[in-house]
Image 1 (tube, each protein chain N blue to C red):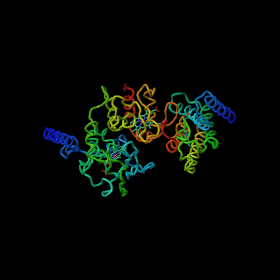
Image 2 (image 1 turned 90 degrees about the vertical axis):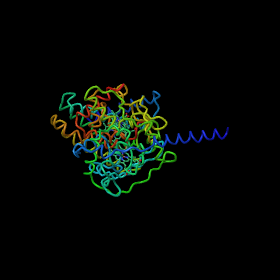
Image 3 (image 1 turned 45 degrees about the horizontal axis):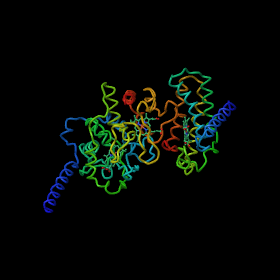
Image 4 (image 1 turned 120 degrees about the vertical axis):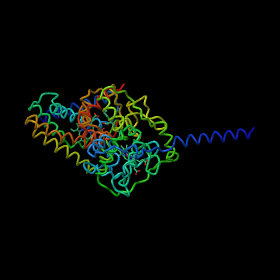
Length: 293
Length: 154
């Protein structure tokens, strides 16, 4: 009897491990999927600003052109530990200058490294998963025009079990979804949705998370605790914001609120990026936010 | 001008104090500096609305608001940016501790505000285009200081 229970136990554990193994396999984008896409570094520059790569990968306190030196080193405290942004400059040994296009695209839209490991979701690939492959190759082309820097990568400071990269496969299985959160029935709303949900990863800050660190889609953009543990990030649904489209577009351009206070905290870096987008894009973001429930 | 400004500041401080007496709690120094900031916003807001075309440009009003802004920026403000009132030390404060640990950097941002608002005051009455061209530096001074020395929302 006991032997039978034991055998069943072993059997179920093996199934469990099999399922675990299966769902945690890191996924990648292949050369074939990218074949036929020609890349434009000019278009990639817009993607770079809209996606805010420099906000995390430039050195702490970098300003102006120094923000294009993607040397890494910024620290991101979270309930799971502290993550450090790596060097993603064109340096071939310390940065990602030696990566193929497919390796780059897999990292950004699938969160998988060239060694086939999962990245931590502190790198917001769960939003970038909705980036078009065309934008991803354009982004790669643009980033290859940026300076190289030989700063070595620092170690993350993350405790067990969160430091086991394979486990992140389970997280991705639960939370990485290519489905849009909001409906969009006009071209402007569609563009706004792409800028907000995919590139701008606005929800990563403005939407609260569940205990496992996944975004709570039922409370989309309703405001969240600041991951640093200090303060709150405001909700930006129309009822919470109380702004008209022109107010939102102005804020994303100059950083001034309708009361002429300025954007603060992490939003300053976001506004530095949205200020570089064409006015239609800021209007599209405003339209998306105003259409939120 | 100077006198109306002082009256305005006194009013703002008084309202702050009344709010305090009304049981909102909070540190008087924090209230005072936020009152100073409200006056910044009010004046810059008027100029910004003219620059954007939300309200009509008026040379006299623009000069007044810009001169008040510059006068405010020239205040020493030392009595209400006091150590021990950083975010986390006292309720309601969003002042970063770096204001006191990096006094030189703070002084530089105060100076940026002074020069930005002074150059705006010099041109604000010279027509809409002059205002539009001049407002950028003053506005950028607000953002630059907030970015470095103002903490996240409580």
